[in-house]
Image: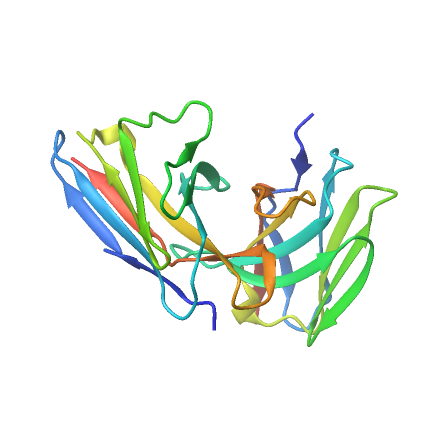
Amino acid sequence: QKEVEQDPGPLSVPEGAIVSLNCTYSNSAFQYFMWYRQYSRKGPELLMYTYSSGNKEDGRFTAQVDKSSKYISLFIRDSQPSDSATYLCAMKGNSGYSTLTFGKGTMLLVSP
Amino acid sequence: GAVVSQHPSWVICKSGTSVKIECRSLDFQATTMFWYRQFPKQSLMLMATSNEGSKATYEQGVEKDKFLINHASLTLSTLTVTSAHPEDSSFYICSANSEWQGSRETQYFGPGTRLLVL
């Protein structure tokens, strides 16, 4: 079993839809959880960053972490064509500069 | 804030030549920088962790003599692909932790360098 599992998609939705992106993980030591957005041929851009369990909202984006289930989610409300990209989840343990473990990324396509 | 740049953005070279890629943190000091490689439709693969003033820590399976990393200052790390071969063609991305942002846990990524070895 891989440490982080993420459905590669593609996930196709119409403009305005609510998008749900998810990752599961197996390492209970993970404490920090991030979502990155990566446009084609570009570097990843940090979208959301949460520590431990709970919800965090930023504009149209909401990140949820359920450590008991080892499951994290990113919700995008009122999706736009410009949201079309690959979304990568990433996580790390609680030890300073320890490395990130990434999911494979989910490709999202929002059609106008 | 927390902007990371890379140069060049793309490079084409002949097999057997060496290529140097620069990674700079523009508005913060990065004690630690990371180098990743990404193949098409694949996720990021960590190659090495680079700490300023010390030797890089390479991930298993990454040849340190082939991928030379130098982190001479708090704002600059370089990756040199020595004697590049076509199988080294990939998208190379660096990232850095941002002390300036008050968070040591997140990484901010550069725009990537696309390498094509003929």
